[in-house]
Image (cartoon, rainbow, N blue to C red; front, side, top):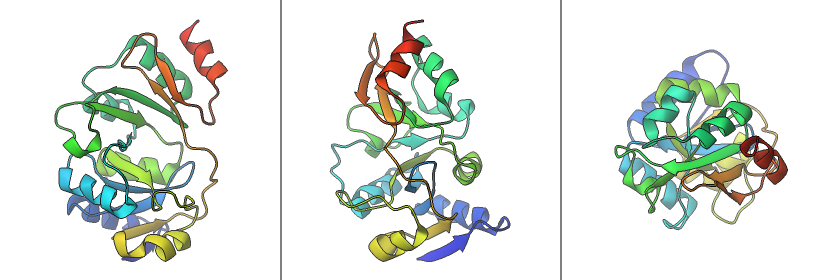
Length: 204
């Protein structure tokens, strides 16, 4: 396990190499630190489940850097999903759609994928360069989410190949999740974006 800071550009080269090898990289997001793997590499995604001690019944979200990556990983989008994208991305909203066939099978047991664009420059820069990443919080299931590189090193160091230290993250609630595979969309989890805010976009 290695820790690199985001000073300069070397961190990005190292992170891309680690991800390309099918290994795991921890990096800051707009909420907590995430633990990421290549979203198209099934074995790499399975490593996420093992590192987290996470049930494979719980799907792993995918973070993207832009709309081009978004449309590449979903089977199709919807008018309602795009209205939410335009209003809340980048930010703490995860949109669930049917997944594209070339995504790693281990992403989800249900043929769907939760997607969002994080509002964090380090996360966006890495994902823009490396491609869509399957990302879950960098902590064991049931443990407190990590907001610093040191917390990851202490609690998960043996399971992480590279930690990108971008300083303390703000923490806070997990993202709001909206299932757009059905009409009308269904709110699966309320987070920083309220039910009222979601409905105000969908009903106007």
